[in-house]
Image 1 (cartoon, rainbow, N blue to C red):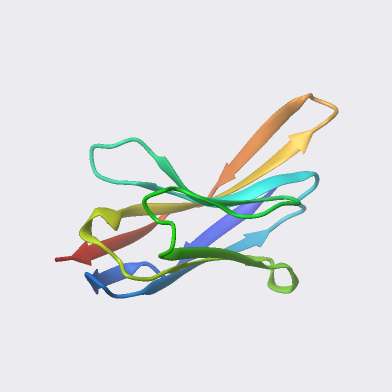
Image 2: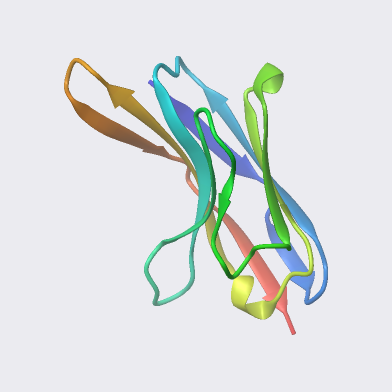
Length: 121
């Protein structure tokens, strides 16, 4: 079973920076992608950034040029460096791992518990 644990959230002033970490454990087979999503109060969860299993990172337009997603395979950890934070970046940030089961013919999504990011104006 894949388990994800996020850390690094907190309260920061607008213009500040935070780095989120997502520690993964368990056996990850047939990785499709890893990524970060966020959910603001009263809104749906939205994609922030993803790294496909064998491709280049993808970013939401709202965070391009400010956020950077990266992986450290040796540490089994996913990161999200967030710079020039804005109040609209406030929300709960979730780590996601997606895998493919060729036997079952479907994708599986694994989620962390989330970490709160609050950006004050």
